[in-house]
Length: 157
Image 1 (spheres, rainbow, N blue to C red):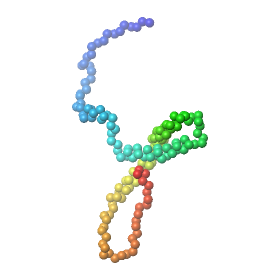
Image 2: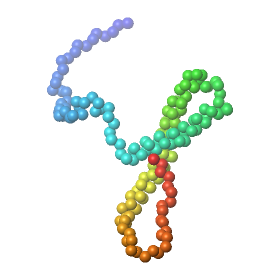
Image 3: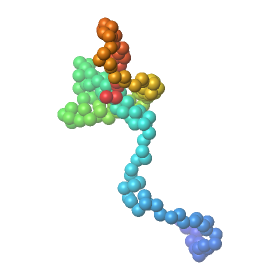
Image 4: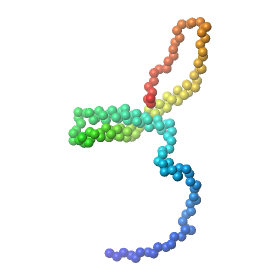
């Protein structure tokens, strides 16, 4: 097998290379940890993340736990003692991924309801009348009716 002779290298011509103007250094360029930091998340993104964790723990975590305790579980795919030791970690990762993937619609629905509820309470919260001090000399007119808000389920507390 014969190879063709190698071509000789030509010297580099700097006039043919594109010029890029240098930019001044920023403080984040000097810090190696600055590249590892994530950008600040908006309130919506934080709420989506928290709801994903909640859905993973509540729905998918319970489902996987019930599957593990099922009488129809096969010993063929059990994984032995190692599978028993690490099954909880595996199920936690599986639940997290399921909530991000298949649970996306459920998560988005819950987030929309929470944001709508928060927006509604902000609108009504601004119109609350100021508390008036009671006059001890007022005439007693019977028991007052208490107006209470209906009980609500706070999903994030």
